[in-house]
Length: 328
Image 1: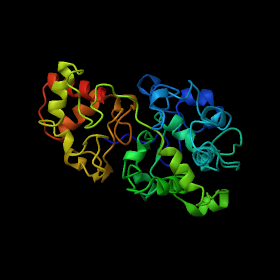
Image 2: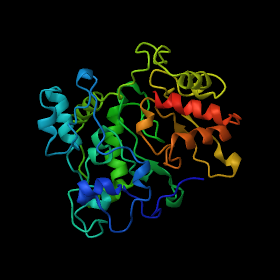
Image 3: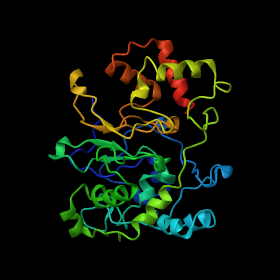
Image 4: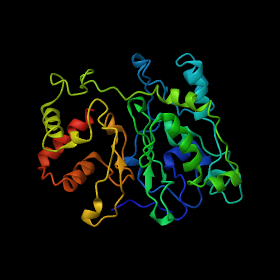
């Protein structure tokens, strides 16, 4: 079944406690994060640059924010990209955190930044409601997805099918920040981003790489079988064969840049409609899984698609698939 928002009638971004401890301004008094820290990505996540693969993690173990972005990235990215990064770490008005009497935080705040949700261009499992669906109670819970490897993707937004990073950047700030309501946004102090700055923000996002995957062939994105274990090789054979994973998740990024409807109503669950094919490169670092975080582990995810796809995988086959995905 669909994983609900803990305050479904209110909505708005909800952050995990590990992130609130770093930034207390993100704490809401009306709702608490509902997933245990043990199934969330590491905090803070590492940052990998496409232009500096030799440097590995360039975050230096810090959470990227308005205080340290210049120190961490000056000299590593171009002036245009650095300006885009400035905008990505800038706090902008957001409904639950605005300096308004009806905010959901104890103290007034300047709002949130793009990098509050996409921490270090990755995710810590934060979630909100999709801004498009009406009526309110039909809206879906959406996990924050990683921005790693966004340069290699042609579709953005779990439900919206936005076709450029620029459109995603602008649309996300104008809709998700205010639960999809431009009228309330205008009343509460929406800060429209000048279209001239949006490409700067997109350029910076396009510099973020997937984490290293030393067992993958750099040309094909498939396993280098001289480096892989027998279990990983068996998992790859299943992935491209019996398990039918490659029907949607194609290398090198392991996505087909399309949206698919799993028609979960066949199983008595609430239907979600078309959801984009999520990228599987680096997937081991991005729990929980599925668009609403209903699947805590990769093992849960394999079992989910085993049922939905009628695959009849054995326990050994499911374990092999997980081993392969951990190598991506």
